[in-house]
Image 1 (tube, rainbow, N blue to C red):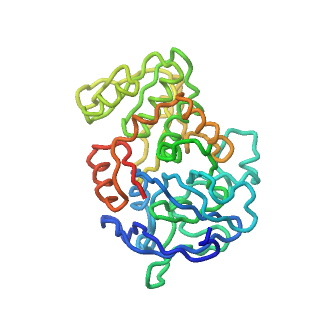
Image 2: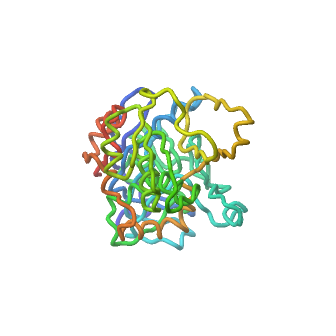
Image 3: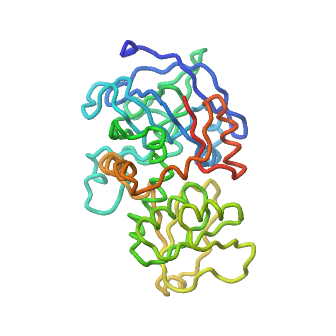
Length: 348
């Protein structure tokens, strides 16, 4: 491409502080350095993590202007030195939880997808290779990165380990969903819980991630899928995707389940709230585990998952509830905050 090796001037939605609307403005995006890739973002979507992670930072970190966003799909514009598994024009999905393939974590036979170099880190704001940024505003002031991806921009630069090549025939708008929410929820059902035919699953919170758990449980043949949410309107969408029962905790005063079972914790939690748990409660056969990115290893396992989505094993259409142009990104955030959308797809 004619832009190879050059600085690109383009649009981005810049966050200047918590509670402030994003500012869509012109930014400059540097060429990729060694083992980096610059991509043209075609679609990006809104996730609660883009704001909740910001709230957990220090005051000094909040002062940095940043380009948020971590669910997206696009096309490779150029590659840096050393990148051999991608080329210009490849269809790709950025991932916030990278996979270098070389560290002891990536090579371990144990069940972990937390790469030693590129695992999810909400506080990381620079590139791995040189500790610098690839974004600047029109005045030359650095703009910092977010979750290894920074997808709220026409162009972004990511490390090679945080980018997955997908089938060129895959619909890129839908592929946006597998870069975070759907993979996280469905993977929790497939990989972490390993749901089997006839089992019962309860899902607390029927947002996009929760409903992705529902979809994963449905596709595995769970006999009962209980959706739990304080918003009664979530029942309709839940039933469309696969819940068999709905419970509003505000309307009952007894435990949903007593006895054995596995509880899986998903998502980034911005507050220091602790779990209240007596050790003896575990002696009934209960287990508590956490799942990051649905226990998927991004670069090695997501291409197959994308093909499964293309084949109809997973229903992605139900998760896209709104579509808006990129300029209306603040409206998209409000839809999510108001509980009116699962995923609002932004067209760049």
